Length: 107
Image (cartoon, rainbow, N blue to C red):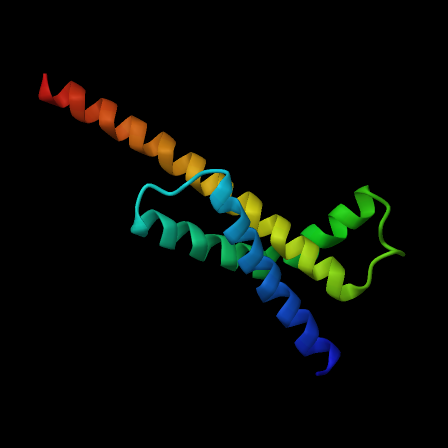
């Protein structure tokens, strides 16, 4: 396997791992929410994994200790985990706002 394929593999594995790990933090309320949050986490991990990996490595001074595969894996997992958690939080806020407005319309 060449280096480019290994980097893409690291992006995908990291993004999937970040989405799976985040299940422990905020459990989805249904299948639809789980599917949407998993998809957002996967896409976010693949798209932003490189930048997030570099930022974490820079902040923790790990650049020389880790190779490109580890940086991409770490960054993709972190980006996916954060996006998944944030989306769950935002969805819950919107649900609360919808519930309150529906109650006030019923009065």
